[in-house]
Figure 1: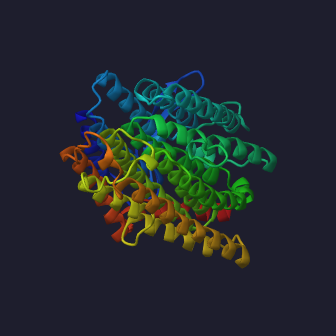
Figure 2: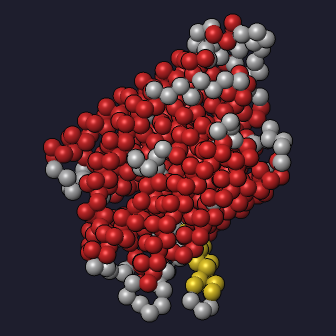
Length: 464
């Protein structure tokens, strides 16, 4: 906990005193020779696209470490694995070398697998095996894309991001590279139909692990989709962007309907995460400054909201010893603090005005409506289907609140004495709720970090 807090303070200090918001170029760079024979470099740097996910990672990891305080069995190993996962995520967001990007992508898989296997639920081995098969399978396509992009047109590997951003490829090769990267990122994001590992993983993982999965792990796929597919492969992205918008629209509706049918509390929250990822996909496919800014804002917003919902859901299940919604009921009376916090974050998740989810989804709407890529009728149809998804969101979230907190089922149980939220839960919840409100009232708090870099990506995309 102390190590995470110290690293978060260091990152905040570096951000405040050394990062220039109006400079879209790479800052705070670190570059030295790594493997002399192949001219591989250890390249790290931060720009407007990576600074938001990096700060989010430090913030959520610190709170997840505090949330894991009740873990007493092999607690040192548990926290070591959380820090190893944290290192891989920070390294990925700060990578400026394609091989280093791939290594950091792989580094965080083993800690997640062990966290699932050792501290998961009854079906933890099944969930961990499914997770590693999906993600490792996607990593094969990522490795092929890295090798293909790095070895093309040169006697020596070219893995520097700055060089690759100006590299051009034959259209057929660019499409193949794009498709390979897309599969890898679609598993992590996740994009249907490669999403089925997520509900099982969230359903069995400890809630502090779920905070890292929902708050950060899913965002790695979205970041890779913007950083590599959109920035390095613009021609292929132009061809695939309509399909991304279609898939994102279908994902919003499909995951919302599937979430409504889930009996397991954590699986319902997991499918709601899949639904909200659809807005990120649509923002990336809109090919506009507004849409891409909305996607990045949704990335940050859902990182806070998703982590908080899993934390509160996990602590609630631990207290009442139940995980199925149809067995719950009446929690609001013995545990009013948890009821208040859970309801507040549920309102944020269903995009209540004044909270970050509303602003992010609204900007994605504006992005797809203002896009010049699509015909007016197509944009109206996409907007209509997205609106249906927004209507479905409060249905499954309010249904979840009704099943958990209202009624009298728990009063019929013997020894039905439940402990309400303590100082630890209150502190973690308030720490997450403050940025949710702050972003909802003042979205430039996040958008000012990425607006210049987004403009550079989109303008470079149209110029090429």
